[in-house]
Length: 119
Image: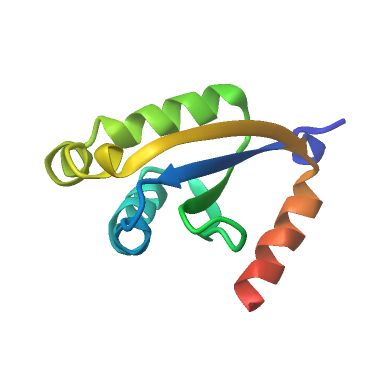
């Protein structure tokens, strides 16, 4: 199998935001942290408020390897922007989070991303 056929890793993050803070968490995500992740090279597929949990929030990101996932994620938290604007704001808004990583064929991931973009 060529590297083009190699599966990507889909990272699914499920956040539990403290009661009453989800709208602000969403605003900060859309206006700040997600654009920052993209600037650092992370493929962010989707994110937003959970439909089945009033304090739930999800984030879907894709990576070519586990090494890339760790490296790029750490690079976000090392930026001056994160440290100055978000380090003292975002983590205190969360009651907790879980991360699951699953392999997904590249073409399926591309189709998923395309269909999300089309709305």
